[in-house]
Length: 282
Image (cartoon, rainbow, N blue to C red; front, side, top):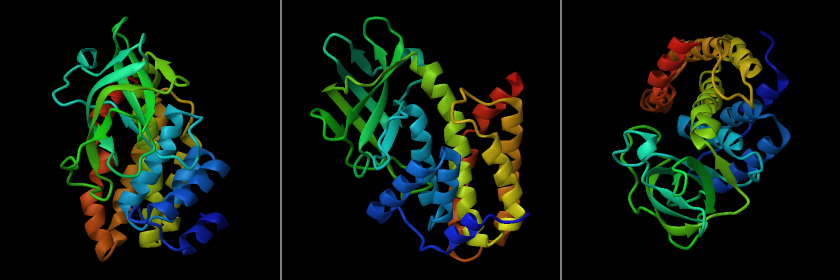
């Protein structure tokens, strides 16, 4: 394939790292403002020092599906998980319509104890029992991140913390009903695709194998739909092919890149169980 000039220029730029979030934030904001989500994720991956930085970049691009009005410079976390939660219908975090407040505890919130600006919180509506999504800034009274990161063997540079919500007021400008179908289910697709594209950008930088990985990356760019509510049979096949190509290309890694890849590639596999269920229904 003929490698796009923009790709070649991107990998020549200094690498960016989550350990220097200010510069990463500015660069990612410029990409989000000027490119469609999939291209922004890929270009951020070309600039990533390690897979964790690529993962964070792809995730922040995916958060623009959760809120298209999220400012480009702002980073956000989608907060759904709760300890011991076996069914979303039993979610303990509650949104009170009358007071406009949320009360509960989320078990996993990305970078909750450091650089996240907004938390998008899925909660059970106290009146209807339906799931809604609300948002609150990190400096909200009654919102407190756990002091210790949740144990995670992958992307340790992007730790997750618990998040306690003690009757916190939420931003009245943002409220999404039927949050499971409108946001939670589709987010699997957007997070999968955009994080994979960003990590593919890192892999091409680290291996120099643009020619071998590039065609599948271009297919994925073409298959990604920023408005999609989930996978189609075709987009699932394209995603599977991209992951397979990345796995084969990883044999060209060396040094610390091998260690990082072996540690963090599980990120690409985490949704496999859910994707298998989706595959059986397509």
